[in-house]
Image (cartoon, rainbow, N blue to C red):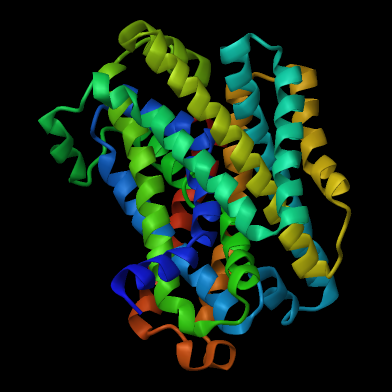
Length: 400
């Protein structure tokens, strides 16, 4: 086999990590990363770098579990806990799925409002319909076409959020942002929010199923999976970094950048309508793709924990209706996004702790059990993510 043939055959195995990576460039990330850059410049660049490394390790362990055991994370949990515990576990996961959909639907609705001046409720309905179409591709045509569509949307997201850097490139001060430090309690809160918007429960659940469904039980593909995860996470990390750098270079101390609408207006004012248009298109692609991936994850959790399959439309409505209800009531979209991140923070331990525990057990993973150093790193990552998300919950609820 020639080198070119080997590269092509290897590339054909990539894809699952790119679907999971959509969770790392969703509207919640847009809100937190642009706020970080606008308020603190390059100060919190290091947070994104650390968060991306953490997320890469977590996503690899999730894919590894699926490839080695042939079971998704929810299925592996189901195998080891009684039904009463499974029901409670599913209940929290379902609430987290609703919170996930809330953030994604609101992001898509805001993007449609920015692009076409559509009411938020109508935009939310359109986002829900678009995500259902994406899910139908996966349901009817299989995982590979779905991966191609999601990867294409990921590229659109990257272009939309990075285009502004061509007009307002970052300064050499960006290097100083790699030094870990804070600037008061608000920067700590924002850093916790950035991390909370990066490591997402539904991406952890989903990746194990994506790798298993694409390749079956295939531990010999762990090396390829590492390439898949690293490539996808580098792209997602670059997109997140582009958001922060754009805000730091062009929106520093700009008024009203606490909301996505305010960020869009500031970009239009500072960089022109063309860049603002690309930003809105990127946000729309983020909303469409991330809500489809989030709903897919909800189906994986339901099937895995309770061994129950429901029709696609029913599954879509379960998490879409609460999001639309929030829009009907007229809750402030920015407040709803913050609230969704808090709920997601509650779900983090339920995804990370079982993942680290299972991949560290030889009776589960066999010869592919985590090396002690990997387990130690995973425990540190899980502890750090859980602690920071706990801080986010406390500071948000107390208003500190």
